[in-house]
Length: 108
Image 1 (cartoon, rainbow, N blue to C red):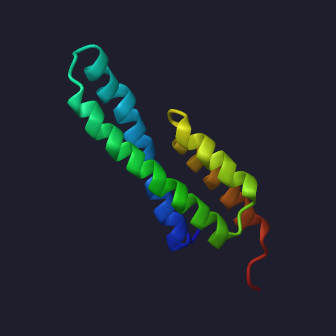
Image 2: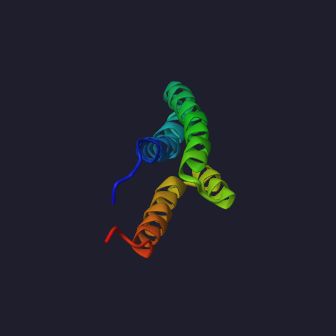
């Protein structure tokens, strides 16, 4: 299945955003709360916040370019605020896009 450049970028941003969220929860927060070292949480939080904003813009752009239903934008944003949510959203997209591609008749 050939994916557009916009969709590929959005999927990579989703992965990076999801990884930054996990880093914030699994590395930054324990260091801050348990070890009393707040600096990593500050930097990981900034990176995660920036990736979240870029992902939100990329998601809207991809929705418009690909002609997705508006509800997929909502699912993507919900996935961005839940741990592992962007990975679940990526699996959802893969499943839906493969089904859509198979449903289309190919050239004769």
